View 1 (cartoon, one colour):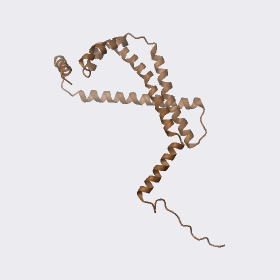
View 2: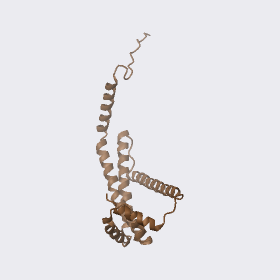
View 3: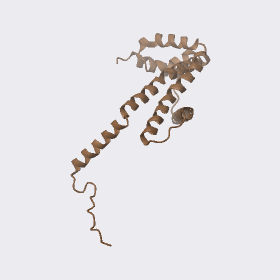
View 4: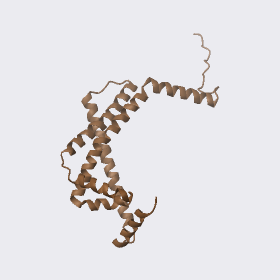
Amino acid sequence: MRKQPPRAVRTVGADESLPDRVLRLGLRFARGLLAHDAFGAAASIAFWIFLSLVPLLVLLGFLVGQVARVRGVDALIGPILEVVPGTAEGLVGKELQRLAGADASVAPLGIVGFLWTASSGFHNLMDVFEAAVKVKRRPWWKQRAIALGWVLLGLATACALAWVLVRTDAMMNAYDAPVSPASATAASATARAAPR
């Protein structure tokens, strides 16, 4: 048996300069983006995620109205008036009164609308990855269930993070010197009257 002469092994990038390697990598990346329709998929996913904010804001308005109904509008207006201009006081108060008087008929619609639209974004993301790696596609209902699970997990994580931040802030402010109501009112009036 004749011995084969050893092949010349080309090491990647051994005879290329750094700019040539970067250019080759950039072209390969761009071809991959175009082959998998990354820009169309990104636009579609962003559309569904941003569309899900509309029912989420409806639900948030309902929850603010419930808090305003239980604690009173003045309890909600106080912290808001510290950051908004003085001319907005009437508008904010009127809108909070309107939210406090709203009925609960929009809450279930807001919840269902948010879950459906947000999970549509995740559903589309799964479609993109399944097409990119060329695997057998999952049934529609299974993809939707996984997407809903991810949305609920994200909501639970956001709620837990908000709770941790509020508790941490309360612990940090527990050692602050108490502020008398008169000085707090004077400070907020001074802040509203200051030119911006």
